[in-house]
Image (cartoon, rainbow, N blue to C red; front, side, top):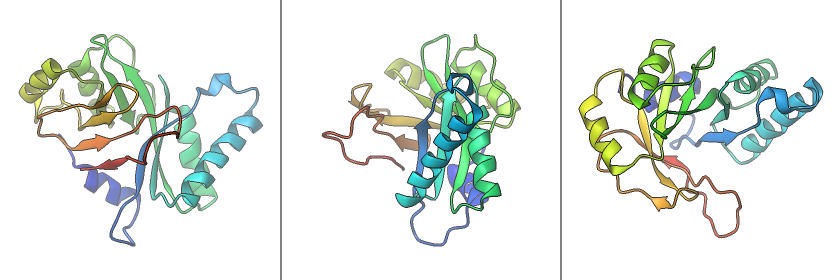
Length: 193
């Protein structure tokens, strides 16, 4: 891991309380799917407002294969002096089937990379990478990459959609994300360890 999540979070927001409330995985459609710019901006503003009402300090806005909508949210939060920090990001599907959440890239990562090379390319571009949907074999492979630019910065250890907790015995910062498609029967499990 090149940098700790806490150091990055401190750059985003000054801590004014004992708990930093973060939701790194708020998914929104790609820019091209919106009918016009006004609908897109209204949607982004609604998401940011809802996050502030929920008491979040940092929100990660993710779109498939591009971080353009996230950068729009980042810019909107700055211009309107909203009390929230925005991490623009993209989702990325590796050729080896792991999904990555990559933050702070100015341009999208090209398709066709396996996990290690995708992490390396994202780090070259200044990105922060969370790996999800990891198999136990992939975790063993990650141990070999730890400390290099080919390793993710963090891993997801809980994902309701993928089947609950993953018993990942790995020495990376760990994220818990419900990834729920419904609020029925789920608790707010988002956090960091």
